[in-house]
Length: 388
Ligand SMILES: [Zn+2]
Image (tube, rainbow, N blue to C red):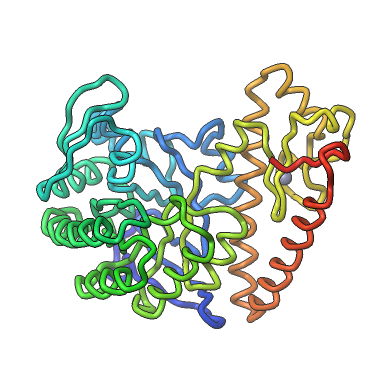
């Protein structure tokens, strides 16, 4: 671990229109942006070991406060020296605040200005999470980047969104006051549903609190791509250039391109590992379900342009066989490919920004994406359409 006066400094290395390439310094090394972070919900990126994550150039991993607080408990993780030791991940880690999971998973939750009382989805026990408690849990977990406790509103309810935004702002102040550790960067979270006016007010308020980074929350929860893009365009000019921006829970290849075009630096999503457990391979432009009978005698790799361990060593027929035989290696091989695919997309994006080639890169991506999906629409199911 290094500590110096540059800790949590974000250096903008290149910019093309709104797209940015930068470096964010953390106690566990620099984060080179744009970056995609795999999700390790239970202190584990499902079906993939730390050394496999390193092999595919993973730099940042996200873990979930809500899950780790309930099981095995943040105090137990603090005893072993924090999440980096516990899960054997020595590169940067980001934890969320627990807010989103409380709203999406917990039973019988009650929200007041003080915090949220909820029933655990694991054993039914009652818990009370406040901004102060969320910070204390995240300090026990010891991630490099931690998040303010926020309230996620349904995206289309304007009155609810405004109340949730105001509460998120009050909680952001309480999180800043509660924070004790100096080796963790606390990010603010811009809320406000699909309403650009609320998003503007949220960004302005949080920028006034001078966080070392800003997340955009409450997106990818059912709104359209256009609505997401409108929110990103409303927020982008208000956020400071010299701080990283993190779009929470977003991570299809198309969303990543659209996010980078609108000034986003950090992405995370469960999609690549979740799809892998449902037998699906992601490529840049399409998804394939390897369970499909058409792959039974297909000895090509998932993607013959991909350099991942799976594509270099295994055929579609072999992976389909593993799925049919219910072998757990299928999830590992598909997760390695899917994660590699997204991580290397962001690496290429970063390189194209540094080379002043991003506009061209994005245009050809969007054209290829359109073509691949137009062709797919032309395929009838009898002809073997394989998109899931
Ligand atoms: Zn591959």
